[in-house]
Image (cartoon, rainbow, N blue to C red; front, top):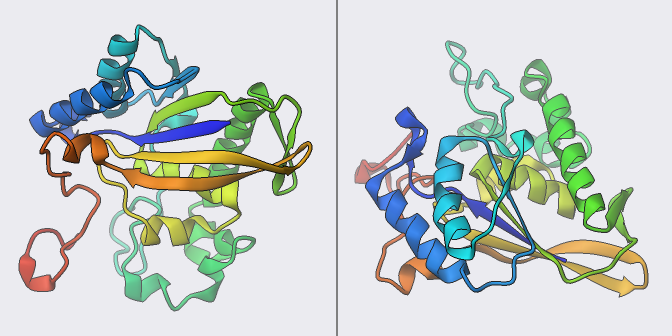
Length: 242
């Protein structure tokens, strides 16, 4: 089985839609995917994800199932350096989390006081349990950290979603703390991450990230990937610190 995790194109967060650049990115994505083998499409209910999916679905004459659990990961936390307002779960400064060994631990990251106060594990479990239901419908049933291949197949499922929840899904598939993925990976808007099953022994499947954050559909058309999701390379750049 193949999964395509597609981050929404360049966002206009104020209107929950896309910027003019984002709409161009979505069209480039549609051009790249229109002839791909995709057996099922799933999309977040948020506008920026649905606007990203629309050109692809139209080009393919295909419909998508709207899935509430694919919306951006919703478990606000109170960041150690800012107790005045809640932040998205993964928005920590490096100096506030990288010296905390528990946040690297796949079995204990949610026990950190900040995560516990935000009840983050409950939302993580809700999202990943529903994700496993989708995979079971495609023939792969979760057993511990592996999947039982009840109906091994070469189906492709495309999931149009968001950066944060995409990392949650990947962390679940490969058995890693989501904190490491949230901070260690950067998926440009409209990028495509490909995950494949491997069945090295009959009936026992695991998922492996084959390609992360592919933006070749932009580069081939001379479109520079937008900066959203990144922070400035140097402090003096002034492009984005927070």
